[in-house]
Amino acid sequence: MSTGTYLTCKTKTLENPAVALVRPDLVARHSVRDTPGAADYDHVQGSLGSVPIHPLARPKRDRSVPLDMKPSKTVVAIPISLLLLAAVVTLRNPDANGAPARAAAAELVVSSARDAGPQTLRDAILAADRLSGRAHILVTAKLIALASPLPALINPRGVDIEAAADSGTLDADHLASGVVLQINSPGSTLKGLHIVHAHGTAILVNAADVQLDSVIIGDSKAGILVNAAGRGCAIRASTFERDETGVIAEAGVRDLTVAGGVFRDNTRAGIWSVAATGKGATAPDPGTEGNRPQEPVRIIDGVFERNASGVVIANQPAFLHKDRFLGSHDSAVLILSGAARIEDSEIRDSGGTALSVTAGKSVHLTHNTFANNPKVAIMMSDSDVTIENNTLSHNGFGIVSILTQGSLTPQIRGNLITGTTGDGITVIGGSPRLERNQVLDGHSAGLRLLDVVQPNGGLKATPTLEANVFKGNALDQPVHGVYKMPGAP
Image 1 (tube, helix red, strand yellow):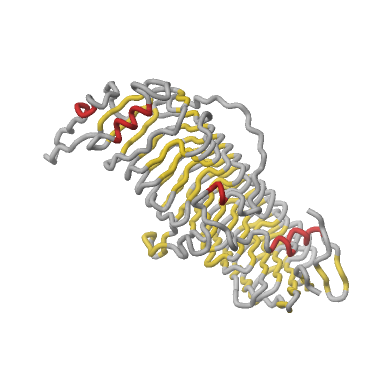
Image 2 (spheres, rainbow, N blue to C red; image 1 turned 90 degrees about the horizontal axis):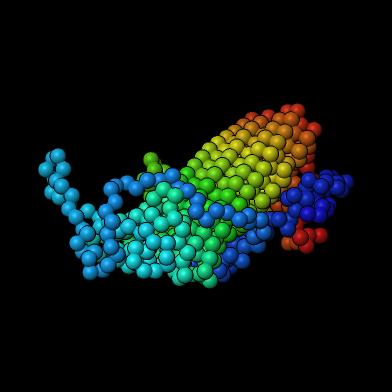
């Protein structure tokens, strides 16, 4: 990135390479005006130039990744024949309290590695879809090379698909596009499946209350896509490696939980939760989480390593809790509009701005750690943001607030900022409130105030300052200057 003159103090112009990190062209680069909805990912993927696809090397991998899982019940071998399947359904015995017996799930075993025919996964799904009760499919075949997309799960009572240990790898390389497995059956579960080389979407969730556990998706375009019909979907302890995008939450999704996931080397984003303006939820659902409202998308205990971006959010409120972002190529978290809450998370070694907020509404960043991000730890532009009780250490810039309109008052309070190579806090225009922050041992200014100059006017930087500590920085007194927007005189 080229550097330039953007900072003028009094009558003297300063050449400051660090200031180039917050040049005016960066203010607009993450806009989502006219961004299409995410319903058609092929069209959405190119709409945000700020989330580039990084051409990462894809080493060859063993297609039969062992999955440390065991079948949960005794397996009864059953021929895959539609005429005999009805006889497979059994009744459970009454429990100790004399509760009435109920129908158990029909057991189907997939032992063939072929694409179609007896004892194949394709045949088992077709059989399960025709049952009047719930079905359980156990996959014991190690590697299945698919020649065409699998039948959709449509059994209204639900289908459980489980891979036995060292089994259940589906290779979709021969499918030119489309969805490998579509779930239209409410309450279905997938456990331990491993899907590789999907040129379209590996799994499409199109029904409520679907549960996915210990799923592995690698070397694919899109891992799991959850659409608006997939309310109550939970994705747990699953791994997404070398995909373009790991999990996509489409416009209108509700009550989606992604917990304990690993997202590694994905070339666009680990999680993509993007809706066009007016298409997604504008605010969290009324509260089930204590007295707080509940966000439609919750990302908890995730590990994000070396992705282009970890999480991309636009117009769909999200809650991130106890997530770790390591070595993101661009931004670890990119909020392009709408609400978000990020708590107790860690962001390190990002190649771009670690956490970027543009046009955010009711964004809360609390008790997070930002360390060793060489550019900017937190940047917000024209956003309603509260940044509270975070720890920032050894970053390029600490917190950068950019306001080109006077109606917003970001809250920046109780943060500890140490050892920045650039400024600790930079206020570019507007009147954010700075309270009880400690900015220590930085190599530039502890606080820099820059008045915005625009083609049609400007906005002075007039923050409210209360009980802040600036100590041990190269400049502990506030430094004043000017920030020129493109086209400004």
